[in-house]
Amino acid sequence: MKFIDQAIIEVKAGKGGNGCVAFRREKFIPKGGPAGGNGGAGGSIIVVARSNIRTLIDFQYRHHFTAPDGQPGSGKEMTGRDGEDLVIEVPCGTVVWDITGKVPVCLADLIHEGQKVIVAKGGRGGRGNASFKSSTRRAPRIATLGQEGETRRLKLELKLIADVGLIGYPNAGKSTLLRRISRARPRVADYPFTTLHPHLGLVQLDQQRQFIVADLPGLIEGAANGRGLGHLFLRHVERTKILVHLVDLAVDDFLLRYKSLRKELKQYSQLLAEKPEIVVGTKIDLLESQKNRELFHQHFPGAPVASGITGSGVKELLEQIWKMLEGQLR
Image 1 (tube, rainbow, N blue to C red):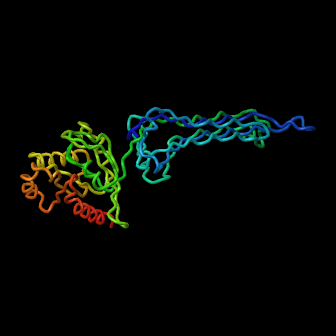
Image 2 (cartoon, rainbow, N blue to C red):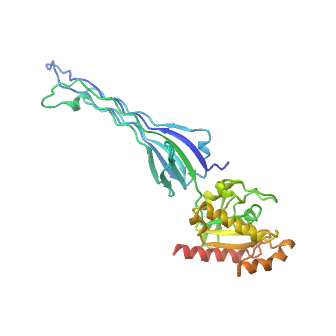
Image 3 (cartoon, helix red, strand yellow):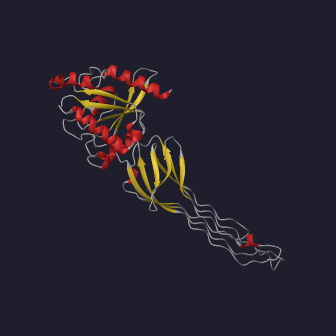
């Protein structure tokens, strides 16, 4: 399934039904009182989070959503039927923005299953003439029209919900590591930007210990300003509890790359830059990495090293991740 994590849609709630002008027509009562009923309310539009949905792909081809109108009132003081609410289902982790005006407004951050928000309220039904009857107005001949429902332009933005975010320069070994530690099967190849969208993997250490890892698109310098995969990466890493920063030891400028990526995180969000981080040297199975290991440990004393290909150092890395996660959960 194609991964879509942003969508623009337009929603229109239902119009309220018109009120009715009517009078009682009963035998032996030639001039019955007012009997026009009120109109029904228009249907509202509700966005609800569902855990069985993984992407916003359903909104790639459908952009307009309209809720049913309320029915008009009728005689015998009968109120019109309300329009049914229209429910739009989105993945858990979806942020709903109202972009109708010049300044975007966040309506909801739908994290949990079943969490919902009314994004457009249906119009109120009009009043029938029976509701205007009073001691001084015995036979009113007026009714009101139903109100228009709200119309809004929305931006849906999916942010993955994971415990751990794998970050690093393109081709740093994130996808290979995720394949090693979970059943996720992201694409792996020896060129940058193999990962074009995030992948989630469940890591099961034992029956009691498990956590979710996100393999996220690689960063390049300028990503905070949208270069490369830019915000596609940064948006999804915001929810993670900790970051695992993969440093490719097969390249000589690994330290420069690390500092560059940290700069991008800080430029995008100070809160993101302050997340707990584990730095790990990767590709230690390659000969090119051996000469850089000593320099790596000089700058990152005690930092783990691992190979997603051979599995060397992976178990120790996972235990360190779990220990840090436990500290976050307390």
